[in-house]
Image 1 (cartoon, rainbow, N blue to C red):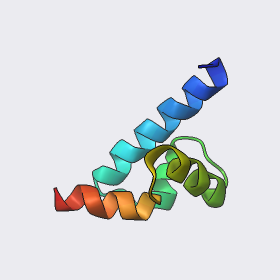
Image 2: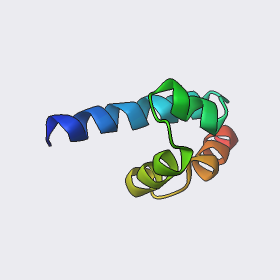
Image 3: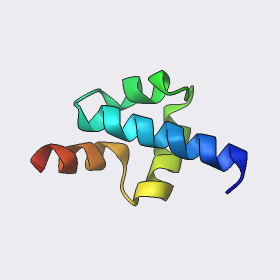
Image 4: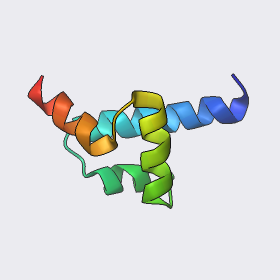
Length: 62
């Protein structure tokens, strides 16, 4: 894993934790450094397999 990939992975992981705690998806994306919510959603879905909103709903059900 390259350093850039590692940083991206950490940012997405931090955002995922925030979303699971009930933070709004757009707010979580901005807090971890994403300027574009569409770019965040695209990268999140690539890593987690579902959109950030779907992932957040699934985490709240557990």
